[in-house]
Image (tube, rainbow over all chains, first blue to last red; front, side, top):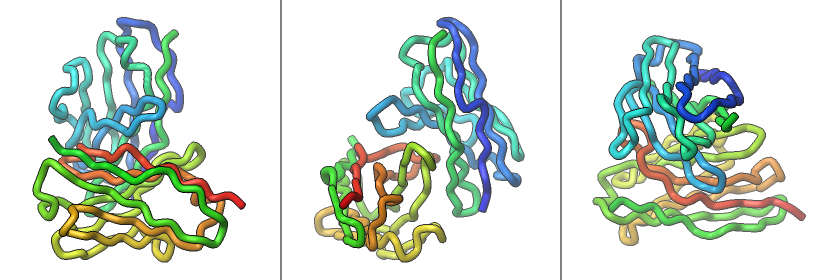
Length: 107
Length: 116
């Protein structure tokens, strides 16, 4: 099974700051990677798919990058509504695995 | 608009089974697989498996073989997941989801609590 290691597990940042969350796959996943945002009591919401494609309706301050085994999610100009947990997920070769999550809080 | 509406919370005793549902609307049901995902505080998000809503064919994550059974009723555009031989470790929120470059659509989640 492909393992996804996400870091950091928690993050504290100020409004307007740029935040980066990383995910490392145990093998090459050929850009088969998605990022999700989840707020308490709600379902995860898709932000990014195919490593760098912005899902419909997602603000442009969110962006994804990476290749091979290393991927990242960047949030530019952090807003209060971005306080949430974030998860990466790989979907290469008909397997699906999630990262452990990052809890983002305001400083 | 695409919607996945799940059944309500379940309280079950150890050793019993539960069957939760996911009713789809807003699209052609048989054009997309439905996946199921487990979320716990300790283990995070785990992929359970998917069902091909057209053929009924299924795929299960090895960990959930024998635990989860996926079925579908095309006439009502509803997917089902039965969880059997429940233990406290099955206590979780279970989601159905539809994939479209990542899981673009999710149900609201069904909390299953296993307790005597």
